[in-house]
Length: 277
Picture 1 (cartoon, helix red, strand yellow):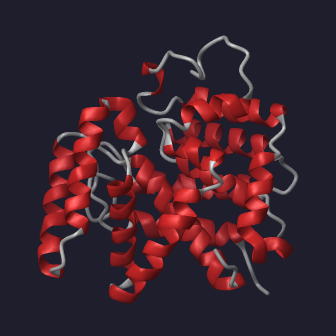
Picture 2: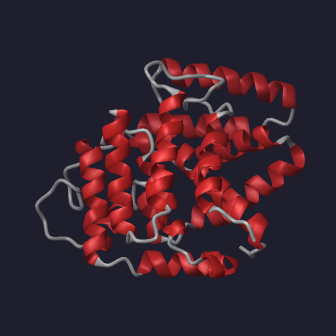
């Protein structure tokens, strides 16, 4: 079987970039100051490092995240790297059992590798993360272990939560939504539907960190209303209006975009290996 995880990872990153996602950067609707070529370069750089079998998980995340940050001079893809890196550590002959294997990898992260993951987050410094200074802050001098910090972070960060609940949001909500959307829409529109689904389920972590609960909750409620629109024409117009509204207020649901890319990647693996969720 001619299977290249590196290739379909890069493809997933590019597919997500090419569709309308309200508030998030895309070729259809750009965020001022952001460049789609940097997103593509970040996908290429990270694909090379994440696919290096000589690197352990924490090493791969640290090198990919910090190299992308240095080359792009901004955080373009830390969330994608954090979510997709464990998938690269699954042996190819075990992809038929992907969900179980992913659980093993996440649950068996050595403390040395966990520290490298935390160092990657510290050095890249995703927007709004320095606002939190309570228990479990990655900038505190406490001696909490990696799993303890991720468990605390899971209360408000959906990427940390994915590590703690074995990607439940992606397997239980994202994949079923995408499968159903592909039956109703073309491929690009199904990706938009997937993104909107994530945005309607919970507060986007990026918006929550930067602007707080009130604004994150407002965006979630608006996404939920859009999700229930039946008319395709009305939905299309509403999505464009919502996109302009979010970009005017600088509300970028970046975490939902990260979850979308990861779902696309797992969906491609499922299509090849026919695993059950």
